[in-house]
Image (cartoon, rainbow, N blue to C red; front, side, top):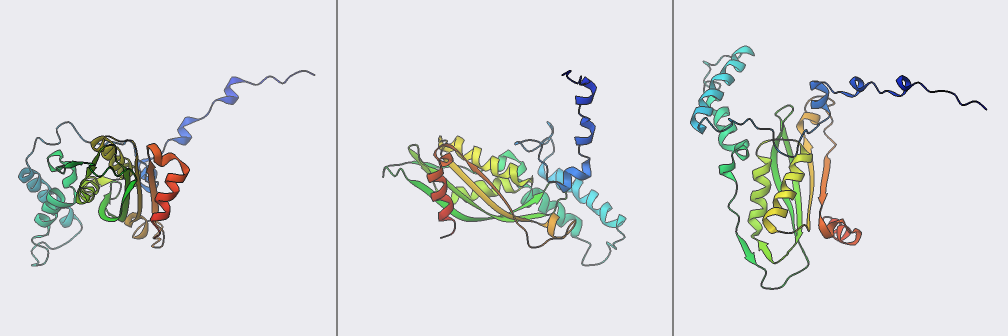
Length: 233
């Protein structure tokens, strides 16, 4: 029986069909890198200079929308938004705001997992600049050092206070903890609601998004199950 010849051209994939547009990337919450995309000159301007520029630009946005900035309620909004961006909700972009981490020797010889549950956070979707609101659960097994419990909260807040994608946020927290604790045995579980889903687009207020990271012993089914079961207690 004569085999049918297959043309090489018939096997080629039209890769253009798989390239997402800017709009599709936003609606699909696609992340491009574990690192937050930053320009090399990101910190040339001081915080005060950034606030002044953002204030000016946001004033133009409000005017373009047709708002009356002479109104008492709106007059100070551009400055308020600018300060909020730089000093609060995007303060995690600046490495100078990285939390000071204090580690302690594990003198008790505690070699079971330590779990910090329900660390609340507020972040912002980098595709639409609207809030992501959720809770983070963290576990680690000490390799000889332990970290102050409040520092776990501060690490979550540091990475949350920047334009984010939830997958990246999960990875950034986990990799940072592995580095500072000098252990692979780290687990991170995030459950969050995205206002870019609930307040626009499909406008579904009932759904939440779950992402997770399991390193070292947490990749073993029994250890992973112990961690996940503890989240429901």
